[in-house]
Image (cartoon, rainbow, N blue to C red; front, side):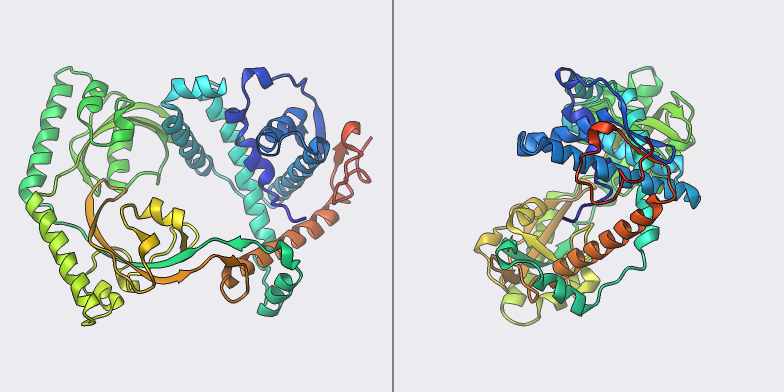
Length: 452
């Protein structure tokens, strides 16, 4: 069965979330060694928690054996990365760590909430995740270097598909292909001046001795950081927009920046702490408002465009290229998923990404009404959506799902490459498996090459 070798590290990421004090009954010991890298029993037990929560207590030994082998292969990749002098910088690691810590702060209501949920102090979690992500990035880079030239041909994709038992082919839920036209109402210079003046008054109050954190809680228009007195958490270079980053990194602890402008609006920043190449800061954001008249004008413009499309005077793609001011303008409005590049959305994904539009009632070619939305920059935008294609629920097939099957076949080919490489590496790498795991049905001969 195919497995992802980085899963060992990914499972570990769940450790602080799943492991409460009542679970901490493991007397720790080293159960696996690859080169100079060890796998501890607690690593396996902690990674087993999310699996147990999902599957119950079925196949506990087999699951632990699989977790151990995934971890051993990950350690083998790390060992290879170190031999090849693959570089993983502290800044690369810190960027990943801060992302997950911010997500946890948002989920659990700040540092105290994290402590209650995980039994780990914030700084403990930071150090724990830092070590995890360093290993994760090293393994990812080593695996990428090993598999970057692996290719699959169309005939190999077809063979992969034909080898899947027909009763094992997944059912693909109903999906939509979409296009959009967006119009951003123009913010007047008067509104920009109002926002700047409001922030200038807040800055003056801070300089006169009022607490920055209190004013951020009361007035900042960044809702997530406002809950925490404007605090953003530690971040490194290239994690914020350039104007914000330049101003923040130029500050001394306690110092307040002048007013700066970014795509989000106007900010003042106060530096809290500097730690190596990262800083912790708080800010107050004031976003200029769009007038009611300008909002109405944008909506009416979109309604007029929708009527022209419905009358057949121009296609949706032509209208997108001519009128849209969003990033999809040059591609005829066609919408892709941000991280995967896939252009198909399930009904749930449509609802999450494009709220307020009734896709369930739309057929291919239908155009929505103009709908208000908020961007990541907390700005009001109006949008028209078209369903360009509606794919009914179906069993996976090469015609409708070629891209997904191609990716699965490529992943399988890369898996095979890593397994073949791992089998060769084992012969020349120090390996030791603890006796209680030597009865595992490993895919690779770990026990054969294990030191006693």
